[in-house]
Amino acid sequence: MPKMYHIDFDESHGARYAILPGDPGRVEKIAAYLENPRFFHRNREYTAWIGEIEGESVMVMSTGMGGPSTAIAVEELYQTGIRNFIRVGTCGGMAEQVAGGDIVIATGAIRMEGTTREYVPLEFPAVAHIDAVNALIQAAKNLGFSWHAGIVHCKDSFYGQHSPDRMPAGCELTDKWRAWIMAGALASEMESAALYITSQILGARAGCVCSVIWNQERERRGLPNPHVRDSTDAIKTAVESVRLMIRQEHR
Figure (cartoon, rainbow, N blue to C red):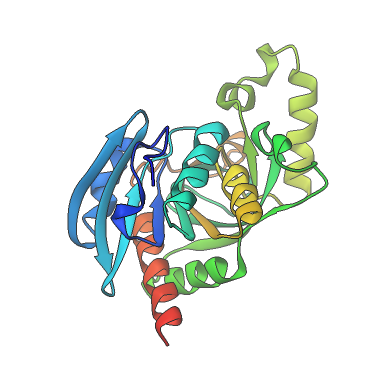
C-alpha cells in the first residue's frame, strides 16, 4: 500500500494497537514501558515508536493538539491496520472531587469542538468502546491509582476556556461551562471527541485516560489544588489497559 499522506508510513509496522499521546515529546517515555522499544518514524506532529506487549506489536504515536490532527491520525493509522486506540493525555479537572495527580477515564465526551461535526450530527454521542473502558478501569484498580470515570468536556480553544471574559463569545462559553459542571462533567481536554467519533465511524475500539494537572474550579472555591505535571500514572494505566485487552483477545 502507499504511504499515508500525513503520517508518512504504510502497514509494514504490523501493529493492531496504538497508544496515542498528544505531545511528540512523550512518545519515547511511553514507549519505554513496552518491550523492545524502538524509533519507527517521524513526520509533522506524528512521532511514532514501536514495541511489544504480550508478544504483540504496539505503536506509540503522537497526535498533536486538538481534534483535526487526532482525527487524521486515527484515520490513517486505521488504514495501516490499527484497530485499537488508547489516548493518554492531560486534562484540567472540573468536578470538585477531581484533583491534580488523579487520572480520569473518559467514558464519553461533550462535543464542544468542530472536527466531529464533519463526521456526524451533534445529536450522536461521542463514547468510548466498552472494552477499552473496562480495561482502563481494571488497569487503574490493579495499579492502585486514584481514578475517576465519566464524561469529559472536549473543546477546540484552550484560551477560550481559561480566559472567557476577554472573548466576544465569553457569555456563551461561561454559561455552557457551568452547565457541563452541573451535569457532572469530570474534566476538560481537547482530543477525546475526535478519537471517539472517528473510531466509531471506522469500527475501531477506542478509550482515553488523562492525567489531571489541576482543577480551576477547586481553586475558585478555595480548596486545595495541587498542580501535578507528572503523567506517569496515566501512562502506566494506558499500557496496562492494552496488556489486558491483548490478554482478553488471546484467550
